[in-house]
Image (cartoon, rainbow, N blue to C red; front, side, top):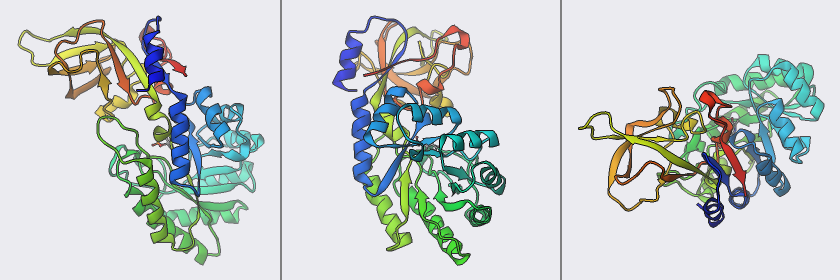
Length: 376
Ligand SMILES: *Cc1c(COP(=O)(O)O)cnc(C)c1O
């Protein structure tokens, strides 16, 4: 919570939930990443918060962009990024979308299998490709599963195939899982990357880049190490596995770039119990899973919530959204402690909501509009 956001909310008169993003915090985060990993290029993961205000600011600071679709490429271009600062980092692309990206001038593509390499070779000849390898996501609060990446051993073949088809076999990428609270998580993936570099060299292919992905956390309820610690720990791991021949590196922060820049203001619509003797109260807000808090799915992300009654005794509450879908319950398995004096009409502040909120909100499910967003 920054003074600027507090001041904005103090004078606000309109109704409904709102996300307020302080662009000064985004600027500070960008500078912190650039300082913590000085030899690494920053490719902001557009999906975390694709607002034009965020993209233009980052473009002006010199950031590059990790995109997942033609629409995201167009947004990065519109924000002022040149095509040489854009990576098409989704491993799942239609061939005609690769062709569109190529027409826009994009020359850097992610792949994780030979069929995807063949698409890129057909419509984006001569481009650079990097192969994504699987990562188990241990230690991450929002792991990315097995959807993306291949086994390290297979990556060597994928890159060799790219080389044979006239593409530039550029390097390796991985993602250690989003909201990764352990800076050592990069170590194992870098060991695999170094092994792939060696085996590719044996086959006469010289790789030059490691894409360290995202995963840098934002602070919710639990403490997280600072960006400096991540930078130092990752650099140590690079030294350990690559010795004096450290490759070019890039990072793709999403959550870590914008998460702590945003605060959502929401209103308590109803407080009730299911029986006279119920120990747990139900607190219904005017925002829920479909209004921007999708990452409460499986109760993965636990946001910090401020109330006007903080300091009063606490009581466990089930927290739910306003829609008529029974999946729209945010914290029930592990109820959330809120002040006993909380009342209908109270305004709550949900902190750390600058990433993966507005962009996830439904267009008009149940008649509720998409999350209103203000950038200051
Ligand atoms: C989503 C994503 C990111 C950003 O991850 P964060 O955990 O938010 O930093 C980076 N790279 C790729 C390829 C992604 O899909």
